[in-house]
Image (cartoon, rainbow, N blue to C red):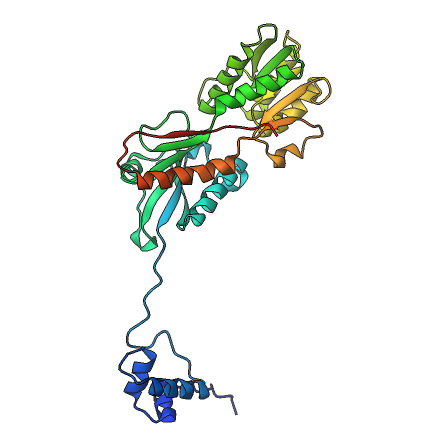
Length: 346
């Protein structure tokens, strides 16, 4: 004979086992105050004895839904022409980690929201109230209209500083100054700053800081060596490989014959390294190198030791939430606040 499905105990079974009405059992399970404590205890014992399990689909009053915590959103607006996977952008990974950690520590729910720079946004109330936003990239006009109504903090602002919302970013000019001082203090008298690709705001600031510091040492010769005639903005007509080759060739042909160089990203140095070897240049031997971002994932792939300035991207993410929390408490102050995180040389 086929096995029959085991019968599930019902409220009527509990009422029969306890010797009370089904209405009384219902009042017990719905936690009504009208039931005598002894009766309540007797019903619960009977239910446990017969193996009764209360269904979430039962009729009658339901327990209140768990209230969602207020949300701090990290909106990341990506330009479709230069879209890059989040997982491969190590800088973003660290910033995102800092934002999420600080948000949770403050008692809010963190939501990472990736959008195209052309997308509209909708702040769905069923996901929890959005009380503030950390912003990266350029939102659409429609998205901007919505975001302007919220406390906002930009992190790593790009080519142009927004005229709304607070800002937190590394002090990129200090990065350049720190690199220049380190090379001079190492005794180098012929120094080159390597410029790879177009100059965005970050690169311009780092170059400005580098030049400012180098001008303090008139006896030291220095110059910029770049990867060719590339205009500011996205370089869509020159391949990365070609720019790297050109940069290495220009460094080899440089009349200054430098002994020290500043490359402003570890990732760039990793990509450039084989081209330098091909051009007869040997970082770590006849070329002293200082870089930036202190990215271990890139550093461990290079067979020589070099200095790398740490801009503390994760801390920048944490500070952006701290600035946002301050703005949430001080929305009556109209002035923008820009906070700069000083770099360090480990």
